[in-house]
Length: 175
Image 1 (cartoon, rainbow, N blue to C red):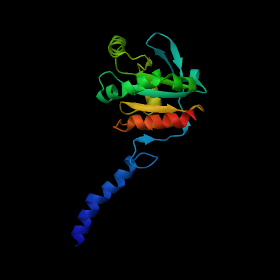
Image 2: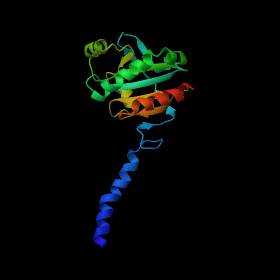
Image 3: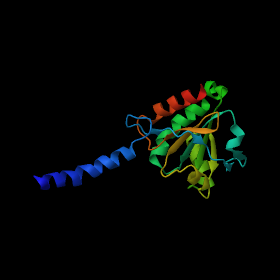
Image 4: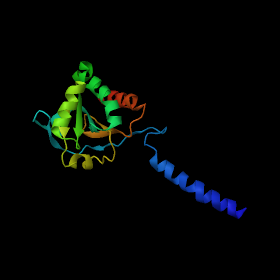
């Protein structure tokens, strides 16, 4: 019997230790993490050549989405981001959508945005400094920053429930 106890311990105990570490804060196996910390400041150039800083949106709820044109899960979430950006009710309440691309060249991004009729603000993070400051390790990563300038929610990786989680995070942040 001691050998069986050793095998169970060697096989199952490490899994027990690893699984909770991968669970998102906020419970239920959710992929939405709540991190009430100050959002790192940044200033990047938009696709239309304007400097955009997160500080430009004080007292707004800012959704920051890190994405790339070649990323399949990114492509799946972008229509929802476009719908949020186009929702005048949400915009009038203070919602801002910023999509940050670090990996594609400007002409590929422009072509992609035109092809799919995306009008939300796209910023280039050419040296990935902003992605690093937000601890982005995978694409897409969606971050909700509250009116107080603090990160309210981080959603990664994307799942079938991600749009619902994002909508809930936005609703809470706009209250």
